[in-house]
Image 1: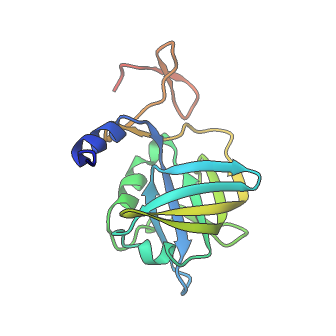
Image 2: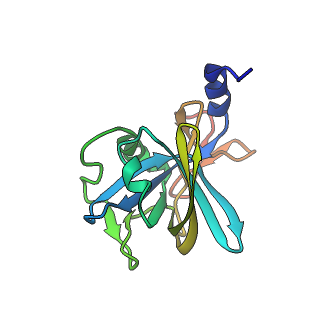
Length: 177
């Protein structure tokens, strides 16, 4: 007997996850993207990473046929962008926060990290597709606290001492806000 979908969703909501924007261009060069909490390093040799995308996503046809994609790991102050890219809206890239890399990818300016991949393989996985990418380029910012999503909300990263780091590096009490 299969697991109850509601219970599975509730259980998976308890797993903290980083938040990223995944972008690719269609054949006409127009950027498309989605919010992902399923960005995972798979292998160091060769360098592989994966993202998962629902087959019902508006951008699914682009990612089902693209040759390259980029992942912009979001900072804690990028929650509005995460929500914008999670919706089925027309122009997710309005606002000018995006830049083109030397490889031609559209990425978020000021992301905690940017990982550019060529598509290594695609795997069907139920109502999703697993996009496995071979990492071609990586950029890591020196400052910034990554966004975290848990219990269906954004949360702060906190130390065992009860202080949550902020983008400025100063601790914020864990019970604040």
